[in-house]
Amino acid sequence: MVIDVNEIPREGLHIDQNFDFISLDLIEEDAVFLEPTHAVVEVKKVGQDVLIKGKINTRLSFICSRCLRPFEYYVDSAFDLVFLPEELDEIKEELEEEDLDRFFYYHQQLDLREIILEQLNLSFPLRPLCSENCEGLCPVCGQLIDHGSCGCEVSASDPRLEKLKSFLRDKR
Image (cartoon, rainbow, N blue to C red; front, side, top):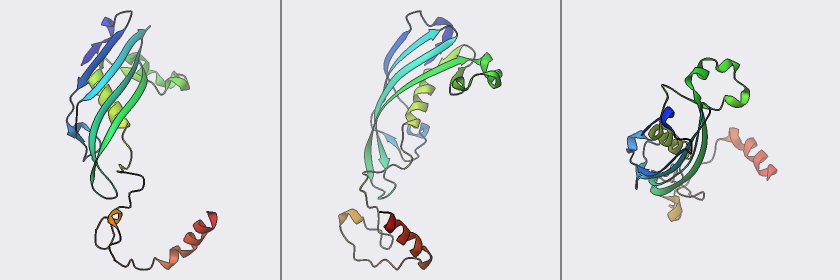
């Protein structure tokens, strides 16, 4: 959905709709959409600046980075962005420090679909976990540790790390 900056009415635009993205658009390789992404977005023009305030919601399936099991991940994210005209991109060395975290629009257009996809990708965790307490897999047999002890004996740790372990124990 491309918005022509020159056609934004004085009262702004209110957009409330679903966006269908494909899983290949996501930065998380194993993520799969379980429902479309719903976005509620307000777009206002103040002088040459375009203010975009929105909220996105969706449900995805991720793979836990510890136990390798799929789990549902809910996205409920809000964003507040300011876009400056492309002419200011050329002179960004002269902009104030507070303007450096702003974005630019080009050819008097904004692609709302791309903005929402970017905000969706930014809402993902660095390492998806099914729960904070997930124990993961046994390094010997590969059995889920959450399901109880597998009986494998884990070999003694590297003796070079013993000092570090004792230091960490003493800190607690």
